[in-house]
Length: 165
Image (cartoon, rainbow, N blue to C red; front, side):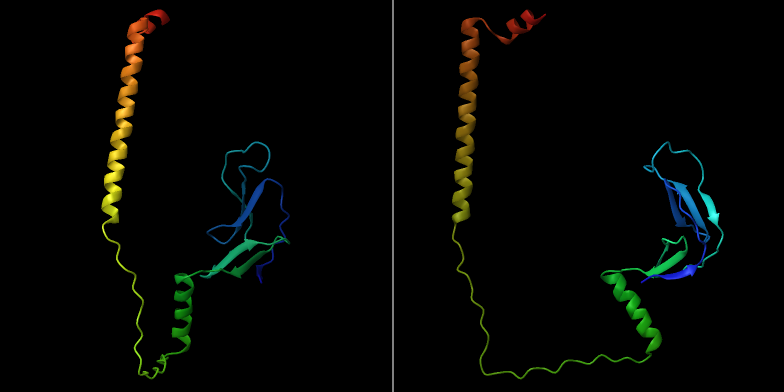
């Protein structure tokens, strides 16, 4: 839920982007896809409010045209860091409780092991190599046949290039 920080009552115009600038004033800039031509120029200050930002909050202009803020939705490490800071300031001596250890039973846990595969990988590699060699042989024989056919019919690559000119 957002809380209002400053009441400005700005009425928005189509094709403009309204935001809170570095100084804390409400500014607007022309949108690239806001309809119509984009005039070159600096952003315009719409309302001077001088809002001081606080870390961990997102500031925006709400539907009524007022400046509002809401807590940022942090994920992962960022959330943990801010939570740790808060706890450190409120509780000076916070101790971690260690969980109680479970009593050992008479049985030991054993994990099932898979049997190791033996030399199947070596066979695959040799099969691949022979397949590559045979495909390479087929390609070279096909090239030889086509070149021999062209020579017999008089359709060599030089003759074709001469005809194109």
